[in-house]
Length: 93
Image (cartoon, helix red, strand yellow):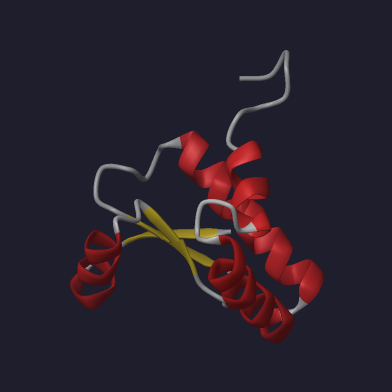
């Protein structure tokens, strides 16, 4: 996973949407300045990368869009799984 600090239009888009991190289809995670070492955020975005790899880019995009329309952003199953991945397993930090 490649992590880049968001700049320019990507940073503006993320701020507009209220995102601290954003996963691209090309194994790059963009994070807002100062969040590069935020392990919770990185685990969240890594989960999205795993979802993309598992389901493929097209199916992921279709399902993500459909689930967001149907369930809302917070209840999108991809987002729920990514939030669950934010906390490390017990005994690990």
